Length: 321
Image 1: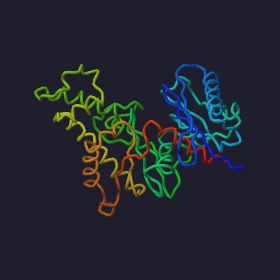
Image 2: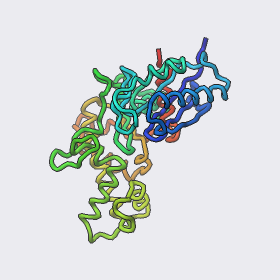
Image 3: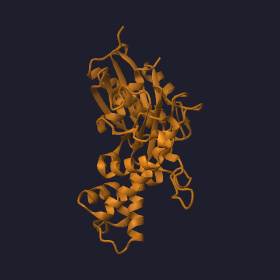
Image 4: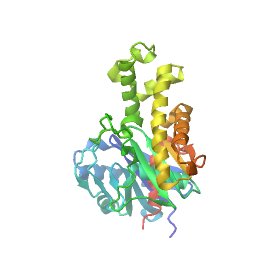
């Protein structure tokens, strides 16, 4: 029987969003639950299963019409189907998430990390349609990445390949990263990193006039920096320039690894548009090997942000064996 639908599940630290998706990438039904509500993963999975059954019933879609369920989750391991030591989830250790959900719902489940799900979504529905070699960089609270080579996601031998947010960009006196190391790209180029740069600039340049000084230092967010930059604030614009330059340096190194056709930016910081894209492009081209110059496209995601995580996860659902 033809199975014209897949289900995508995006497991976030705060919310879990689910959607039934058709082959054109249209979300037929969707819903959400609070991830953090349950201290026990079994209780969470029971509520998630009830939600899946509810939206399937609402859409008059039976199990035999679902090809598979794809899940994007922090520290999701595609090979094992497990969420492993995710720092922003309440359930600790190794959780055999795909197996547990499949036992409850009776539909095949595949799982990967959230950035890999975004890469699958771009390849299936978004800016990477028709591409075989590209990298998706997710610029959110952290910096994630999904690497596709010759049409296949790069997972490595253990399922955790592609942690490009944790390449070391500053070997000496680097910032402490949430991973425990110092100098990681994520510590500079995530939304959190932008806010940290703002606090540093305010301290190091006390004579510079900026509207950021009207905000309590510890409360500054990347959106505050974006709003100030868009209104013409020079310091805020310099913060985005600094952020883009570091990303460009990193991208030049990533290109040397896999020679991608494109690097695709997704996530909150990508909304900054040319504020961040222009310094990224200039810095990347300046640091590229000559053989790669002017060959790599820098693109923004074509997926609607509110739907992208679910679409990316659902694309994995089509591949479930």
